Image 1 (tube, rainbow, N blue to C red):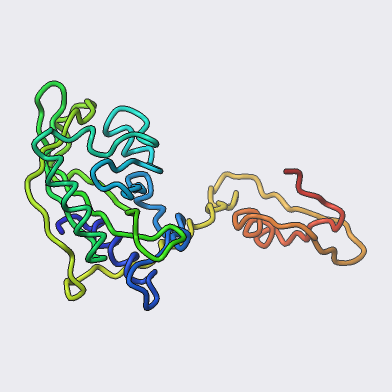
Image 2 (cartoon, rainbow, N blue to C red):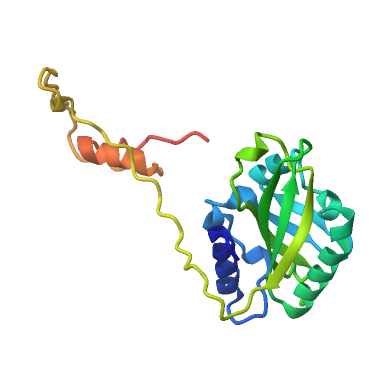
Length: 232
């Protein structure tokens, strides 16, 4: 595997197993994959010769120029590649091992880019895997695409990912930092303001606030009114 996200996906898949051969689709938490989720997809390969997209990220759909959900996975592969792909899917499900697929993607104008797809087998409420969680990434410089979609892919090679292959450790990304509230005193000519709040006793809030609002309240030393309500 060449792309960092390929390693991250397989590492996450491996940790989800918890002693099982493969994880189940319900184990997948989209929040754990949020930085690459737009390129992730779920493939139904109960019939390995006719696999279909169950879900597909928005960036991946944009890459191919249409909504992928419910469409054939092999439809955008050239005819000579389809039998090889079907065989790989069957073998990956039988071995219960992820497979990395190398390919070339071509636009309608003839521009070519190198691509990598990783498919990791998963179950869907049954004992045997019939689906894949996968990710497709462009490895080479994407600028030749010039905004054009991938019209078809050509199979180049594949490898099964072994347990002893080094995997990049996956750490869920930290939450975004709260916005910085700049003091008006930071400018030498800024007027000096003093916030005065009149209250007889401390008040407590009974609703949830996001982190940015909580940080702002702490900075201004405000305690929210107890009767405040959040409208949804």
